[in-house]
Image 1: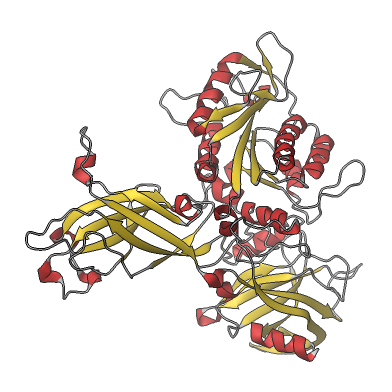
Image 2: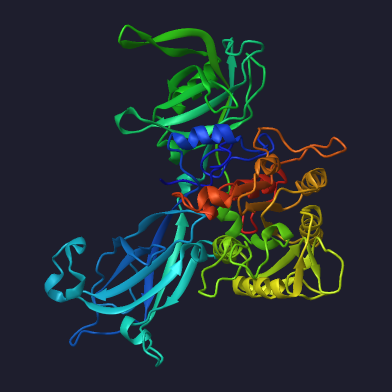
Length: 581
Protein backbone atom coordinates (compact mmCIF):
# COMPACT_ATOMS: atom_id res chain seq x y z
CA UNK A 1 0.00 0.00 0.00
CA UNK A 2 1.14 3.54 -0.41
CA UNK A 3 -0.99 6.23 -1.98
CA UNK A 4 -3.45 9.09 -1.57
CA UNK A 5 -7.27 9.13 -1.07
CA UNK A 6 -9.30 6.77 -3.05
CA UNK A 7 -12.82 6.09 -3.40
CA UNK A 8 -13.12 2.55 -2.09
CA UNK A 9 -16.91 2.48 -1.96
CA UNK A 10 -17.59 3.82 -5.41
CA UNK A 11 -14.38 3.09 -7.22
CA UNK A 12 -15.16 5.95 -9.59
CA UNK A 13 -12.22 8.05 -8.54
CA UNK A 14 -8.53 7.53 -8.85
CA UNK A 15 -6.67 5.85 -6.11
CA UNK A 16 -4.62 8.62 -4.66
CA UNK A 17 -7.34 11.04 -3.65
CA UNK A 18 -6.83 12.91 -6.86
CA UNK A 19 -9.99 11.82 -8.41
CA UNK A 20 -12.46 14.60 -8.49
CA UNK A 21 -12.47 17.65 -10.67
CA UNK A 22 -14.98 19.49 -12.80
CA UNK A 23 -14.50 16.81 -15.41
CA UNK A 24 -15.18 14.00 -13.01
CA UNK A 25 -17.85 14.75 -10.42
CA UNK A 26 -18.56 11.71 -8.33
CA UNK A 27 -22.10 10.69 -9.20
CA UNK A 28 -22.42 7.92 -6.70
CA UNK A 29 -20.98 4.45 -6.28
CA UNK A 30 -22.48 1.41 -7.90
CA UNK A 31 -22.90 -1.27 -5.29
CA UNK A 32 -22.66 -4.19 -7.69
CA UNK A 33 -19.51 -2.86 -9.32
CA UNK A 34 -18.01 -2.05 -5.91
CA UNK A 35 -18.70 -5.57 -4.71
CA UNK A 36 -17.03 -6.84 -7.86
CA UNK A 37 -13.92 -4.77 -7.10
CA UNK A 38 -13.85 -5.71 -3.42
CA UNK A 39 -14.09 -9.40 -4.28
CA UNK A 40 -10.92 -8.98 -6.34
CA UNK A 41 -8.90 -7.52 -3.49
CA UNK A 42 -9.37 -3.77 -3.97
CA UNK A 43 -8.20 -1.87 -0.91
CA UNK A 44 -9.46 1.39 0.52
CA UNK A 45 -8.11 4.82 1.28
CA UNK A 46 -4.47 5.40 2.06
CA UNK A 47 -1.61 7.88 1.76
CA UNK A 48 2.11 7.33 1.98
CA UNK A 49 3.59 9.32 4.90
CA UNK A 50 7.27 9.68 5.79
CA UNK A 51 8.01 10.19 9.50
CA UNK A 52 11.16 11.89 10.81
CA UNK A 53 12.23 12.64 14.39
CA UNK A 54 14.18 15.01 16.60
CA UNK A 55 14.41 15.38 20.38
CA UNK A 56 15.46 17.90 22.98
CA UNK A 57 16.53 17.81 26.64
CA UNK A 58 16.85 14.04 26.83
CA UNK A 59 17.94 12.51 30.12
CA UNK A 60 21.67 11.92 30.42
CA UNK A 61 22.22 8.33 31.52
CA UNK A 62 25.97 8.09 30.79
CA UNK A 63 28.59 8.90 33.42
CA UNK A 64 31.46 10.16 31.27
CA UNK A 65 29.52 11.37 28.22
CA UNK A 66 26.03 12.20 27.01
CA UNK A 67 23.42 9.60 26.04
CA UNK A 68 23.54 7.84 22.66
CA UNK A 69 19.84 7.87 21.74
CA UNK A 70 17.79 5.78 19.31
CA UNK A 71 14.03 5.89 18.59
CA UNK A 72 11.94 2.75 18.22
CA UNK A 73 8.52 3.31 16.61
CA UNK A 74 5.48 1.08 17.06
CA UNK A 75 1.94 0.96 15.72
CA UNK A 76 -0.67 0.17 18.37
CA UNK A 77 -3.63 -2.06 17.54
CA UNK A 78 -7.15 -1.65 18.90
CA UNK A 79 -6.40 -4.47 21.34
CA UNK A 80 -3.34 -2.62 22.65
CA UNK A 81 -0.77 -4.84 20.99
CA UNK A 82 2.35 -3.14 19.64
CA UNK A 83 3.95 -3.89 16.30
CA UNK A 84 7.38 -2.46 15.61
CA UNK A 85 7.46 -0.12 12.60
CA UNK A 86 11.18 0.57 12.66
CA UNK A 87 14.23 1.97 14.43
CA UNK A 88 16.38 5.02 13.80
CA UNK A 89 20.15 5.06 13.81
CA UNK A 90 22.01 5.75 17.06
CA UNK A 91 23.12 9.39 17.45
CA UNK A 92 26.29 9.47 19.54
CA UNK A 93 26.79 11.71 22.53
CA UNK A 94 23.71 13.95 22.15
CA UNK A 95 20.79 15.08 24.32
CA UNK A 96 19.26 17.04 21.42
CA UNK A 97 19.49 14.63 18.51
CA UNK A 98 18.04 14.87 15.01
CA UNK A 99 17.81 11.44 13.45
CA UNK A 100 18.43 10.83 9.74
CA UNK A 101 16.46 7.59 9.47
CA UNK A 102 12.88 8.05 8.33
CA UNK A 103 10.00 5.61 8.45
CA UNK A 104 7.20 5.26 5.93
CA UNK A 105 3.65 4.46 7.01
CA UNK A 106 0.37 4.19 5.13
CA UNK A 107 -2.02 6.79 6.51
CA UNK A 108 -5.63 5.64 6.50
CA UNK A 109 -8.30 8.23 7.14
CA UNK A 110 -10.94 5.78 8.32
CA UNK A 111 -8.76 4.20 11.03
CA UNK A 112 -7.43 5.61 14.30
CA UNK A 113 -3.71 4.89 13.90
CA UNK A 114 -1.95 5.16 17.27
CA UNK A 115 1.83 5.39 17.23
CA UNK A 116 4.12 4.75 20.20
CA UNK A 117 7.65 6.19 20.28
CA UNK A 118 10.28 4.85 22.69
CA UNK A 119 13.70 6.41 23.11
CA UNK A 120 16.67 4.32 24.31
CA UNK A 121 20.25 5.12 25.26
CA UNK A 122 22.33 2.51 23.44
CA UNK A 123 25.25 1.24 25.49
CA UNK A 124 28.74 1.80 24.07
CA UNK A 125 29.44 -1.93 23.77
CA UNK A 126 26.62 -2.24 21.20
CA UNK A 127 27.64 0.64 18.92
CA UNK A 128 28.94 -1.73 16.26
CA UNK A 129 25.77 -3.83 16.25
CA UNK A 130 23.07 -3.19 13.62
CA UNK A 131 20.17 -1.42 15.28
CA UNK A 132 17.65 -4.04 14.14
CA UNK A 133 19.73 -6.66 16.02
CA UNK A 134 19.83 -4.75 19.32
CA UNK A 135 18.04 -6.27 22.30
CA UNK A 136 16.05 -3.44 23.79
CA UNK A 137 16.08 -4.93 27.28
CA UNK A 138 19.86 -4.43 27.26
CA UNK A 139 19.57 -0.68 26.55
CA UNK A 140 18.64 2.12 28.95
CA UNK A 141 15.10 3.40 28.51
CA UNK A 142 14.91 7.20 28.28
CA UNK A 143 11.20 7.78 27.81
CA UNK A 144 8.18 7.23 25.60
CA UNK A 145 5.35 9.16 23.99
CA UNK A 146 2.30 8.32 21.86
CA UNK A 147 0.18 10.14 19.30
CA UNK A 148 -2.47 9.45 16.70
CA UNK A 149 -1.15 9.82 13.16
CA UNK A 150 -4.04 12.10 12.17
CA UNK A 151 -2.99 14.52 14.95
CA UNK A 152 0.39 14.92 13.25
CA UNK A 153 -0.65 15.16 9.60
CA UNK A 154 -3.33 17.80 10.28
CA UNK A 155 -0.90 20.26 11.88
CA UNK A 156 -0.13 23.26 9.66
CA UNK A 157 3.60 22.50 9.84
CA UNK A 158 3.05 18.71 9.85
CA UNK A 159 4.93 18.48 13.18
CA UNK A 160 3.85 17.51 16.69
CA UNK A 161 6.01 17.87 19.82
CA UNK A 162 5.37 15.30 22.54
CA UNK A 163 6.48 15.05 26.16
CA UNK A 164 8.54 11.97 26.85
CA UNK A 165 7.64 10.13 30.05
CA UNK A 166 9.03 7.08 31.82
CA UNK A 167 6.70 4.08 31.68
CA UNK A 168 7.12 3.14 35.35
CA UNK A 169 6.90 6.70 36.61
CA UNK A 170 3.88 7.59 34.48
CA UNK A 171 1.92 4.71 36.01
CA UNK A 172 2.36 6.11 39.52
CA UNK A 173 0.14 8.71 41.07
CA UNK A 174 3.02 11.17 41.38
CA UNK A 175 3.80 13.41 38.46
CA UNK A 176 6.46 11.77 36.25
CA UNK A 177 9.72 13.65 35.86
CA UNK A 178 10.55 15.49 32.65
CA UNK A 179 12.28 13.12 30.24
CA UNK A 180 12.62 15.60 27.40
CA UNK A 181 10.59 16.16 24.27
CA UNK A 182 10.23 14.31 20.98
CA UNK A 183 9.16 16.09 17.79
CA UNK A 184 7.62 13.97 15.04
CA UNK A 185 7.36 15.40 11.53
CA UNK A 186 5.11 13.85 8.88
CA UNK A 187 5.61 14.52 5.19
CA UNK A 188 3.34 13.23 2.47
CA UNK A 189 5.40 11.62 -0.29
CA UNK A 190 5.51 13.80 -3.39
CA UNK A 191 4.76 10.81 -5.61
CA UNK A 192 1.46 10.50 -3.76
CA UNK A 193 0.44 13.77 -5.45
CA UNK A 194 1.61 13.02 -9.00
CA UNK A 195 -1.45 12.23 -11.06
CA UNK A 196 -2.07 11.14 -14.62
CA UNK A 197 -5.26 12.37 -16.27
CA UNK A 198 -6.66 10.45 -19.22
CA UNK A 199 -9.81 10.39 -21.28
CA UNK A 200 -10.38 6.85 -22.55
CA UNK A 201 -12.70 5.88 -25.39
CA UNK A 202 -13.67 2.62 -27.03
CA UNK A 203 -15.02 1.89 -30.50
CA UNK A 204 -16.94 -1.01 -32.03
CA UNK A 205 -17.72 -2.78 -28.76
CA UNK A 206 -19.57 -6.05 -29.10
CA UNK A 207 -23.20 -6.53 -28.11
CA UNK A 208 -23.53 -8.38 -24.80
CA UNK A 209 -27.22 -7.72 -24.07
CA UNK A 210 -30.04 -9.37 -26.01
CA UNK A 211 -32.35 -6.40 -26.43
CA UNK A 212 -30.01 -3.42 -26.19
CA UNK A 213 -26.45 -2.28 -26.59
CA UNK A 214 -23.90 -3.02 -23.89
CA UNK A 215 -23.52 -0.91 -20.71
CA UNK A 216 -19.71 -0.66 -20.59
CA UNK A 217 -17.33 0.37 -17.82
CA UNK A 218 -13.57 0.02 -17.45
CA UNK A 219 -11.55 -1.51 -14.65
CA UNK A 220 -7.84 -0.66 -14.56
CA UNK A 221 -5.60 -3.02 -12.59
CA UNK A 222 -1.92 -3.06 -11.79
CA UNK A 223 -0.08 -6.36 -12.25
CA UNK A 224 1.75 -7.60 -9.18
CA UNK A 225 3.84 -10.68 -8.48
CA UNK A 226 2.80 -13.88 -10.24
CA UNK A 227 0.82 -11.78 -12.73
CA UNK A 228 -2.08 -11.16 -10.37
CA UNK A 229 -4.13 -8.05 -11.31
CA UNK A 230 -5.13 -5.72 -8.47
CA UNK A 231 -7.85 -3.18 -9.41
CA UNK A 232 -6.89 0.45 -8.79
CA UNK A 233 -9.55 2.35 -10.74
CA UNK A 234 -13.06 1.98 -12.13
CA UNK A 235 -14.89 4.28 -14.49
CA UNK A 236 -18.58 5.07 -14.42
CA UNK A 237 -21.04 2.83 -16.28
CA UNK A 238 -22.23 4.25 -19.62
CA UNK A 239 -25.58 2.83 -20.59
CA UNK A 240 -26.52 1.48 -24.00
CA UNK A 241 -23.37 2.56 -25.88
CA UNK A 242 -20.96 0.65 -28.15
CA UNK A 243 -18.58 3.60 -28.63
CA UNK A 244 -18.37 5.08 -25.13
CA UNK A 245 -16.16 7.96 -23.97
CA UNK A 246 -15.69 7.89 -20.21
CA UNK A 247 -15.18 10.81 -17.87
CA UNK A 248 -11.61 11.79 -17.06
CA UNK A 249 -9.62 8.97 -15.47
CA UNK A 250 -7.24 9.97 -12.67
CA UNK A 251 -4.43 7.56 -11.80
CA UNK A 252 -1.88 8.11 -9.09
CA UNK A 253 1.63 7.25 -10.28
CA UNK A 254 2.73 5.67 -7.01
CA UNK A 255 -0.30 3.42 -6.84
CA UNK A 256 0.43 1.83 -10.22
CA UNK A 257 4.17 1.63 -9.47
CA UNK A 258 5.69 3.69 -12.29
CA UNK A 259 4.97 4.84 -15.82
CA UNK A 260 6.52 1.60 -17.11
CA UNK A 261 4.54 -0.76 -14.84
CA UNK A 262 2.11 -3.00 -16.75
CA UNK A 263 -1.58 -2.24 -16.41
CA UNK A 264 -4.53 -4.38 -17.45
CA UNK A 265 -7.48 -2.36 -18.76
CA UNK A 266 -10.63 -4.47 -18.89
CA UNK A 267 -13.91 -3.42 -20.47
CA UNK A 268 -16.99 -4.99 -18.87
CA UNK A 269 -20.68 -4.97 -19.65
CA UNK A 270 -22.49 -4.03 -16.45
CA UNK A 271 -25.11 -6.39 -15.00
CA UNK A 272 -27.07 -5.48 -11.88
CA UNK A 273 -26.49 -9.01 -10.55
CA UNK A 274 -22.81 -8.18 -10.16
CA UNK A 275 -21.82 -10.82 -12.74
CA UNK A 276 -20.36 -8.48 -15.33
CA UNK A 277 -19.45 -9.74 -18.82
CA UNK A 278 -15.88 -9.20 -20.01
CA UNK A 279 -16.06 -7.50 -23.43
CA UNK A 280 -12.31 -7.32 -23.96
CA UNK A 281 -9.05 -6.05 -22.50
CA UNK A 282 -5.59 -4.69 -23.23
CA UNK A 283 -2.34 -4.66 -21.28
CA UNK A 284 -0.43 -1.38 -21.46
CA UNK A 285 1.74 0.78 -19.21
CA UNK A 286 1.11 4.48 -18.68
CA UNK A 287 4.04 5.13 -21.01
CA UNK A 288 2.34 3.00 -23.68
CA UNK A 289 -0.94 4.86 -23.20
CA UNK A 290 0.89 8.17 -23.58
CA UNK A 291 2.29 6.94 -26.91
CA UNK A 292 -1.19 5.91 -28.07
CA UNK A 293 -2.38 9.43 -27.32
CA UNK A 294 0.52 11.18 -29.07
CA UNK A 295 0.16 8.92 -32.11
CA UNK A 296 -3.62 9.19 -32.25
CA UNK A 297 -3.85 5.43 -32.64
CA UNK A 298 -6.13 2.86 -31.10
CA UNK A 299 -5.24 -0.47 -29.52
CA UNK A 300 -7.31 -3.56 -30.34
CA UNK A 301 -8.91 -5.28 -27.38
CA UNK A 302 -8.44 -8.99 -27.01
CA UNK A 303 -10.55 -11.65 -25.34
CA UNK A 304 -9.02 -14.77 -23.75
CA UNK A 305 -10.76 -17.75 -25.41
CA UNK A 306 -10.50 -21.40 -24.49
CA UNK A 307 -9.21 -23.49 -27.37
CA UNK A 308 -8.96 -27.10 -26.31
CA UNK A 309 -7.36 -26.94 -22.88
CA UNK A 310 -5.44 -23.72 -23.48
CA UNK A 311 -6.39 -20.06 -23.56
CA UNK A 312 -5.64 -17.98 -26.64
CA UNK A 313 -6.10 -14.26 -27.01
CA UNK A 314 -8.71 -13.54 -29.66
CA UNK A 315 -8.03 -10.09 -31.15
CA UNK A 316 -11.23 -8.09 -31.46
CA UNK A 317 -12.40 -5.36 -33.80
CA UNK A 318 -13.02 -3.22 -30.69
CA UNK A 319 -10.35 -0.61 -29.96
CA UNK A 320 -9.24 1.51 -27.01
CA UNK A 321 -8.25 5.16 -27.65
CA UNK A 322 -6.57 7.67 -25.36
CA UNK A 323 -8.12 11.05 -26.25
CA UNK A 324 -6.28 12.95 -23.50
CA UNK A 325 -3.10 12.28 -21.52
CA UNK A 326 -1.49 14.68 -19.03
CA UNK A 327 0.44 14.49 -15.79
CA UNK A 328 0.38 16.98 -12.92
CA UNK A 329 0.59 17.40 -9.17
CA UNK A 330 -2.68 18.03 -7.33
CA UNK A 331 -3.36 19.07 -3.77
CA UNK A 332 -4.37 16.09 -1.66
CA UNK A 333 -6.78 15.61 1.20
CA UNK A 334 -3.96 16.13 3.68
CA UNK A 335 -2.88 19.34 1.94
CA UNK A 336 -6.32 20.79 2.56
CA UNK A 337 -6.39 19.75 6.21
CA UNK A 338 -2.94 21.19 6.86
CA UNK A 339 -3.88 24.26 4.83
CA UNK A 340 -6.64 25.47 7.10
CA UNK A 341 -9.63 23.28 6.23
CA UNK A 342 -11.41 21.43 9.04
CA UNK A 343 -14.01 18.68 9.30
CA UNK A 344 -16.93 19.35 11.63
CA UNK A 345 -18.84 16.40 13.04
CA UNK A 346 -22.64 16.38 13.63
CA UNK A 347 -24.89 13.54 14.76
CA UNK A 348 -28.62 12.77 14.63
CA UNK A 349 -30.22 9.84 16.50
CA UNK A 350 -33.47 8.03 15.74
CA UNK A 351 -35.87 8.02 18.73
CA UNK A 352 -38.86 6.46 16.96
CA UNK A 353 -40.98 3.87 18.79
CA UNK A 354 -39.85 1.02 16.52
CA UNK A 355 -36.59 0.97 18.52
CA UNK A 356 -38.50 -0.60 21.42
CA UNK A 357 -38.93 0.41 25.05
CA UNK A 358 -35.50 1.65 26.23
CA UNK A 359 -36.09 0.07 29.63
CA UNK A 360 -36.25 -3.44 28.13
CA UNK A 361 -33.17 -5.46 27.12
CA UNK A 362 -34.51 -6.16 23.61
CA UNK A 363 -34.65 -2.44 22.79
CA UNK A 364 -32.06 -0.98 20.45
CA UNK A 365 -31.85 1.92 22.93
CA UNK A 366 -31.33 -0.28 26.00
CA UNK A 367 -28.52 0.98 28.23
CA UNK A 368 -26.77 -2.12 29.54
CA UNK A 369 -25.80 -1.75 33.25
CA UNK A 370 -22.62 -3.72 32.48
CA UNK A 371 -21.45 -0.85 30.32
CA UNK A 372 -21.65 -2.75 27.04
CA UNK A 373 -22.61 -0.15 24.39
CA UNK A 374 -25.74 -0.61 22.29
CA UNK A 375 -25.66 -0.20 18.52
CA UNK A 376 -26.33 3.54 18.69
CA UNK A 377 -23.51 4.07 21.17
CA UNK A 378 -21.13 1.92 19.16
CA UNK A 379 -21.80 3.86 15.97
CA UNK A 380 -21.25 7.18 17.77
CA UNK A 381 -18.00 6.00 19.34
CA UNK A 382 -16.56 4.35 16.23
CA UNK A 383 -17.31 7.23 13.86
CA UNK A 384 -16.67 9.95 16.43
CA UNK A 385 -13.28 8.67 17.54
CA UNK A 386 -12.02 9.02 13.97
CA UNK A 387 -13.60 12.37 13.09
CA UNK A 388 -12.84 14.11 16.40
CA UNK A 389 -9.18 14.56 15.42
CA UNK A 390 -10.22 16.64 12.42
CA UNK A 391 -12.59 18.92 14.37
CA UNK A 392 -10.59 21.69 16.03
CA UNK A 393 -13.07 22.80 18.72
CA UNK A 394 -14.69 19.37 19.28
CA UNK A 395 -18.07 21.03 19.84
CA UNK A 396 -20.52 18.76 18.04
CA UNK A 397 -24.12 19.61 17.04
CA UNK A 398 -26.28 16.70 18.24
CA UNK A 399 -29.96 16.13 17.51
CA UNK A 400 -32.67 13.56 18.02
CA UNK A 401 -35.71 12.93 15.85
CA UNK A 402 -38.98 11.03 15.99
CA UNK A 403 -39.72 11.58 19.71
CA UNK A 404 -42.09 13.57 21.89
CA UNK A 405 -40.37 15.76 24.49
CA UNK A 406 -42.13 15.98 27.85
CA UNK A 407 -45.49 17.79 27.42
CA UNK A 408 -44.76 18.60 23.79
CA UNK A 409 -45.63 17.48 20.25
CA UNK A 410 -43.56 15.00 18.26
CA UNK A 411 -40.33 16.63 17.11
CA UNK A 412 -38.36 15.57 14.07
CA UNK A 413 -35.30 17.57 15.06
CA UNK A 414 -34.70 18.41 18.72
CA UNK A 415 -31.48 19.32 20.50
CA UNK A 416 -30.10 16.20 22.14
CA UNK A 417 -28.83 18.20 25.15
CA UNK A 418 -32.35 19.39 25.99
CA UNK A 419 -31.50 23.03 25.37
CA UNK A 420 -33.89 25.24 23.43
CA UNK A 421 -31.09 27.60 22.41
CA UNK A 422 -28.04 25.61 21.30
CA UNK A 423 -27.44 22.16 19.87
CA UNK A 424 -23.73 21.63 20.55
CA UNK A 425 -22.18 19.27 23.08
CA UNK A 426 -18.53 18.91 24.07
CA UNK A 427 -16.68 15.92 22.67
CA UNK A 428 -17.76 12.35 22.05
CA UNK A 429 -18.41 11.92 25.76
CA UNK A 430 -20.78 14.88 25.58
CA UNK A 431 -22.76 13.16 22.83
CA UNK A 432 -22.97 9.97 24.88
CA UNK A 433 -24.15 11.80 28.00
CA UNK A 434 -26.74 13.83 26.06
CA UNK A 435 -28.02 10.64 24.39
CA UNK A 436 -28.43 8.82 27.70
CA UNK A 437 -30.17 11.84 29.24
CA UNK A 438 -32.53 12.22 26.28
CA UNK A 439 -33.73 8.63 26.68
CA UNK A 440 -35.04 9.61 30.13
CA UNK A 441 -36.70 12.81 28.96
CA UNK A 442 -38.51 11.98 25.72
CA UNK A 443 -41.19 9.50 24.65
CA UNK A 444 -40.41 7.46 21.56
CA UNK A 445 -42.84 8.19 18.74
CA UNK A 446 -42.57 8.51 14.94
CA UNK A 447 -42.59 8.50 11.94
CA UNK A 448 -39.01 8.37 10.65
CA UNK A 449 -38.29 11.69 8.92
CA UNK A 450 -34.82 12.75 7.78
CA UNK A 451 -35.76 15.99 6.06
CA UNK A 452 -35.72 18.31 9.12
CA UNK A 453 -32.36 17.00 10.38
CA UNK A 454 -30.72 17.27 6.97
CA UNK A 455 -32.20 20.76 6.65
CA UNK A 456 -30.62 21.81 9.95
CA UNK A 457 -27.23 20.43 8.95
CA UNK A 458 -27.49 22.15 5.58
CA UNK A 459 -28.34 25.45 7.28
CA UNK A 460 -25.23 25.28 9.48
CA UNK A 461 -23.12 24.41 6.42
CA UNK A 462 -24.54 27.26 4.33
CA UNK A 463 -24.07 29.78 7.14
CA UNK A 464 -20.44 28.74 7.54
CA UNK A 465 -19.94 29.04 3.80
CA UNK A 466 -21.54 32.50 3.70
CA UNK A 467 -19.23 33.65 6.49
CA UNK A 468 -16.14 32.52 4.59
CA UNK A 469 -15.52 29.47 6.76
CA UNK A 470 -13.20 26.77 5.47
CA UNK A 471 -15.11 23.94 7.08
CA UNK A 472 -16.53 20.71 5.71
CA UNK A 473 -19.40 19.19 7.69
CA UNK A 474 -20.10 15.50 8.27
CA UNK A 475 -23.55 14.48 9.54
CA UNK A 476 -23.94 11.00 11.05
CA UNK A 477 -27.55 9.75 11.08
CA UNK A 478 -28.23 6.57 13.06
CA UNK A 479 -31.63 4.99 12.43
CA UNK A 480 -33.47 1.72 12.92
CA UNK A 481 -35.98 2.05 10.11
CA UNK A 482 -36.65 3.02 6.55
CA UNK A 483 -37.20 6.73 6.04
CA UNK A 484 -40.85 7.73 5.69
CA UNK A 485 -40.35 11.05 3.87
CA UNK A 486 -38.29 9.57 1.02
CA UNK A 487 -39.03 12.27 -1.56
CA UNK A 488 -38.61 15.09 0.97
CA UNK A 489 -35.28 13.53 1.95
CA UNK A 490 -34.21 13.35 -1.69
CA UNK A 491 -35.13 17.03 -2.13
CA UNK A 492 -33.07 17.97 0.93
CA UNK A 493 -30.08 15.90 -0.27
CA UNK A 494 -30.16 17.36 -3.78
CA UNK A 495 -30.20 20.86 -2.30
CA UNK A 496 -27.40 19.99 0.14
CA UNK A 497 -25.20 18.52 -2.62
CA UNK A 498 -23.99 22.05 -3.39
CA UNK A 499 -22.83 22.58 0.21
CA UNK A 500 -19.67 21.48 2.08
CA UNK A 501 -21.55 18.54 3.61
CA UNK A 502 -21.42 14.74 3.60
CA UNK A 503 -23.99 12.50 5.27
CA UNK A 504 -23.19 9.12 6.79
CA UNK A 505 -26.18 6.89 7.57
CA UNK A 506 -25.93 3.83 9.83
CA UNK A 507 -28.86 1.43 9.84
CA UNK A 508 -29.19 -0.49 13.13
CA UNK A 509 -31.50 -3.38 13.94
CA UNK A 510 -33.08 -5.94 11.64
CA UNK A 511 -35.12 -3.76 9.29
CA UNK A 512 -35.00 -4.14 5.50
CA UNK A 513 -32.88 -1.18 4.42
CA UNK A 514 -33.02 -1.74 0.64
CA UNK A 515 -34.92 1.50 0.07
CA UNK A 516 -32.28 3.36 2.04
CA UNK A 517 -29.65 2.41 -0.51
CA UNK A 518 -31.42 4.66 -3.02
CA UNK A 519 -30.11 7.60 -1.01
CA UNK A 520 -26.58 6.26 -1.48
CA UNK A 521 -27.01 6.44 -5.27
CA UNK A 522 -25.92 2.82 -5.44
CA UNK A 523 -27.63 2.13 -8.76
CA UNK A 524 -25.24 4.41 -10.57
CA UNK A 525 -27.74 7.27 -10.91
CA UNK A 526 -27.68 10.55 -9.02
CA UNK A 527 -30.56 11.59 -6.80
CA UNK A 528 -33.26 13.66 -8.42
CA UNK A 529 -35.55 16.10 -6.61
CA UNK A 530 -39.31 16.44 -7.08
CA UNK A 531 -38.66 19.41 -9.37
CA UNK A 532 -36.34 17.40 -11.62
CA UNK A 533 -33.09 18.87 -10.33
CA UNK A 534 -30.22 16.36 -10.15
CA UNK A 535 -27.72 16.25 -7.28
CA UNK A 536 -24.43 17.91 -8.22
CA UNK A 537 -22.49 15.16 -6.42
CA UNK A 538 -22.99 12.13 -4.20
CA UNK A 539 -22.89 13.16 -0.53
CA UNK A 540 -24.44 10.08 1.13
CA UNK A 541 -22.84 6.89 2.37
CA UNK A 542 -25.17 4.25 3.87
CA UNK A 543 -24.25 1.02 5.63
CA UNK A 544 -26.36 -1.45 7.65
CA UNK A 545 -24.55 -1.95 10.95
CA UNK A 546 -25.14 -5.69 10.91
CA UNK A 547 -23.37 -6.05 7.56
CA UNK A 548 -20.03 -4.99 8.96
CA UNK A 549 -20.04 -5.48 12.70
CA UNK A 550 -19.05 -9.14 12.42
CA UNK A 551 -16.82 -8.81 9.38
CA UNK A 552 -13.23 -7.96 8.73
CA UNK A 553 -13.85 -4.22 8.36
CA UNK A 554 -15.53 -1.99 10.92
CA UNK A 555 -18.53 0.23 10.35
CA UNK A 556 -16.14 3.17 10.43
CA UNK A 557 -14.13 1.91 7.47
CA UNK A 558 -17.27 1.13 5.47
CA UNK A 559 -18.78 4.53 6.24
CA UNK A 560 -15.75 6.77 5.95
CA UNK A 561 -14.07 5.22 2.92
CA UNK A 562 -15.85 7.59 0.53
CA UNK A 563 -15.57 10.75 2.62
CA UNK A 564 -12.16 12.10 1.46
CA UNK A 565 -13.22 11.83 -2.18
CA UNK A 566 -16.50 13.64 -1.45
CA UNK A 567 -14.46 16.33 0.30
CA UNK A 568 -12.04 16.66 -2.63
CA UNK A 569 -14.89 16.71 -5.15
CA UNK A 570 -16.37 19.70 -3.39
CA UNK A 571 -13.07 21.57 -3.02
CA UNK A 572 -11.81 20.99 -6.54
CA UNK A 573 -15.01 21.65 -8.44
CA UNK A 574 -15.10 25.04 -6.70
CA UNK A 575 -11.37 25.66 -7.18
CA UNK A 576 -10.83 26.05 -3.43
CA UNK A 577 -7.12 25.93 -2.62
CA UNK A 578 -5.37 25.16 0.70
CA UNK A 579 -4.45 28.42 2.42
CA UNK A 580 -0.75 27.57 2.57
CA UNK A 581 -0.73 27.06 -1.16
